[in-house]
Length: 210
Ligand code: SF4
Image (tube, rainbow, N blue to C red; front, side):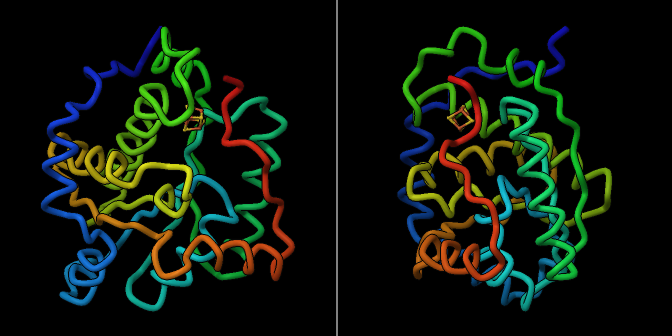
């Protein structure tokens, strides 16, 4: 049975409005962090390499717990490899880690009918939404005041869409969203360098089998 009920695809006008008002996501994130309002942050991590440079930015500024929730990764062996690397990195950096459920059936329900959509399109939007919604619910359960995601470090993912979804999820759950665009200021390049330094496994595909 599908536990995830996808909403209608994100209204593209709303993405545009968010983009106009929040075009400087990185600067907005810095302003929020320096205001001192982020005391306990739950950071959704898509993988250890992406989280490496994001943790370098965030951990000096607030209390971060990593949340690994990625039921989109297939096959299971690949998922097991990626989460093992996340565990290793969190141990190395002494950052707490919460491991989410590998509810791959839930992911497949969320993207049903969009299997043939191109990467970066509507299937990815559902995939982002599922992961952000689950992260916000976990944040609420654990008493975190903000949630955030490493997904914006990737140059292949649309930060406008991810941030727009983050704000929508925040409205739905009542947990504050910390916007970001971690690829800025060489964030992606830094994740490659840190992955080399920590000898992290860097996957060659996003995650799903589609
Ligand atoms: S390509 Fe990546 S973001 Fe898009 S649906 Fe697949 S796993 Fe999710």
